[in-house]
Image 1 (cartoon, one colour):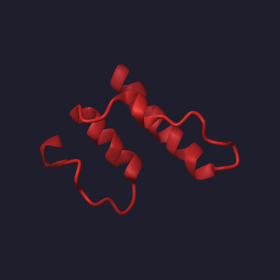
Image 2: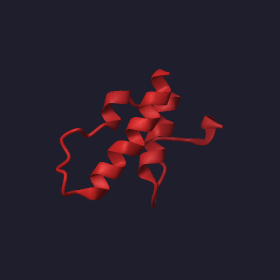
Image 3: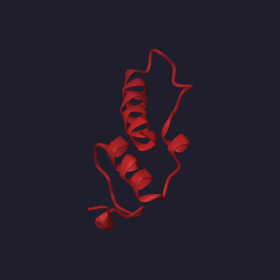
Image 4: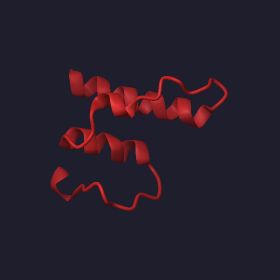
Length: 61
């Protein structure tokens, strides 16, 4: 399924899921997906961190 995923795809939404697919494909490192410096007031950044953290956790599991 990952064969069709490429780094040059135009992503309109769900970029966090796209980045996880790139990680699963070996094109991104797990630590590249986590932004632990996001301010607590930036809810979008926090949601992205949780989404990416779930994917990274699964990667290591």
